[in-house]
Length: 424
Image 1 (cartoon, rainbow, N blue to C red):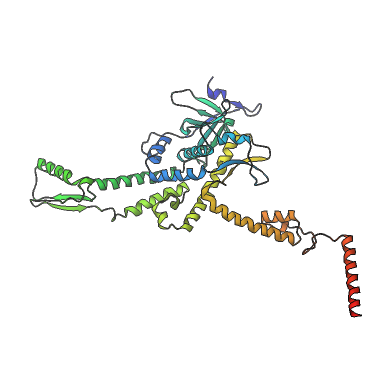
Image 2: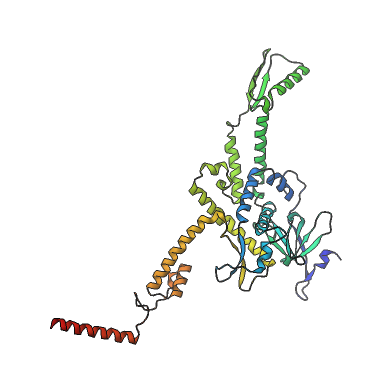
């Protein structure tokens, strides 16, 4: 029986069947040179473009420092247990950082990251994204078809595969899209500009040149003259050598050099667009435009932006995808812990200052006579309408007892007697 036939399932009794659809995680096209598949992004972008490599490396370096914890749905308190062991040691010699780095790398290059939990061996396995097909029933994912070249396809149950697609593909329901896709032309242009710079250096670090002679030269003479000029003056080793012409020959420069064509500005603009698509500020990667405006304050603001708009959504998405692979305690969810992320230490210091101010505010509310429970709700929510007053003010937070009243009356009587004796 065919795979598709076995996957036909009744939707409702007596209402027919719904067809299984296959969504390829990476579609191949017959065109060449357009960065249209996983291998092209790996070889023509990640391995051969410094900006792409640096952006993905920065994302991996930040993301991989986080840890996974459980968090109650009604609290921000994080806790762990033995169930997290598989995420802490996903495979032999692997750590949580290795798991996150692999997921980020695949998501950046393919738009999708797949992690499979082997129920027999009790370990995790990274699935190469271009070998995975998403199997659906038209409404939801029912499995993943994993095909290693040269081997038979294996259908993996949906419950055993964590699928993280941080950027949804508008052309598919379940597949993700690489952030490199919108800037693929920028990547190609950046590579061409790098080649242009290399060609400029290979041709004696000078622009194009025309040599004009009087009269008409035989074909063989022209060929020999061109070969002699190339041998003596082309290439980095021949740069800046003196050009000697005779017989009425004249050399003229055509085209523009790198400075005249604003080469650095043009290349920097393309690099900046790649950085924007990656979600990594230019100053963090070390690009020219970012470094020109770099100060300590700017760097910290850039790191905060990097963490807030890129890091936290990625961590939250990873935790949501991996949650199905662990036994989550009731009333809790898989979450992430950034307390060990070195890049966010200053943010933690500022958070400590905020917590201190909140504690002082909480103390002032309680001293003013509000109930501690309502004061905590008001401080944590920022809604002062939740404050509930006890009816007691100043230091009189507890009503006086009858003994205290009698003691106070006796003290007042004794004071009056002493005062009368003094006057007498």
